[in-house]
Image (cartoon, rainbow, N blue to C red; front, side, top):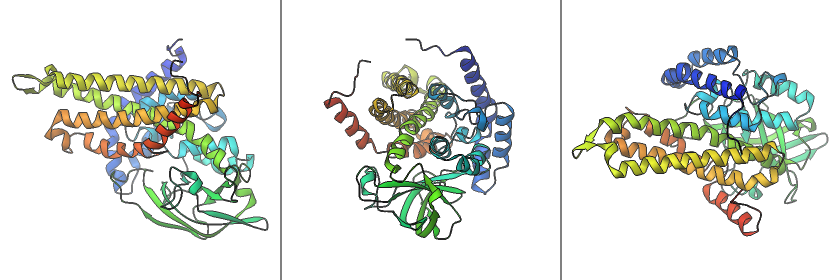
Length: 397
């Protein structure tokens, strides 16, 4: 078992890290400030610089302007990008576009890929993934899906109510999951719907615990008699649940990669303060309670990193079904680890950590969604427990 990166990937990782350190992190406050004003001058400049540096969309094949990296290669780079909240966006690897690009690449026709994937890959447009519904509709349980798509000749008519369609308000194209039959496994279909199509209603960006930033604005959408041609079906009719699963397993991993980068940066940012700040006659870093925080969080980050690598290896070997419970394990562990790292960072800094003078309070508000996105903690625990009880999950791999 060799955890050493191949020389070319190690060099690429170092290049991404340097770009994040030298260009992205110094610009993140300015990018977010401009974003709040509806501008993206600094972001646009950095995205062009990432293209010029050969670091654009590394997850895509070279024919789409990417680097053709596998899942393990993405692990190496996405962790570096994730050290900044704006990093993934700079390299055109942010959610939901990154997962949508992959879905279009594997399930769309050549014509559809030319129409939508190429401009997505070029960063000319953005996309949304419209699956989650308000109660009593689909959330972590996809069988509760209520949005429908009724066939009408050579068209389908979509009706439904969605929310948490990330970036849906600004997207050019939406991937909409709708029910096309009552069959439990083949009763859903994915449709490509233009954001400006008649009947597509943007209700609002939902006010959330985290501030709206970049594409991370959680749109509430209504689809009222939206007519789409049969060519708008992604894959085949009835493939919706299978495609959702195929998208979500690697998407959970890419989330983990980005979260690990942010967790590592947050923990390291604590070092200068705890070694300088004195309390009860000695530096905070000399207190056992603080040392325990560092030890537990460093171990949690390392464990999450290994879980992510292991699951990525399974996916690269084509063992998607086997990888599913491990992706749930990794997603659950890394999401909770990120939140704990940030909570402890706030605690270590006391009043300073709770203030906006340090980034931890903002990062925590953003990170808290990690325990809900792509399946709540409880669902992932259920998956892991179920597969372990049935003998389908090995812990000593």
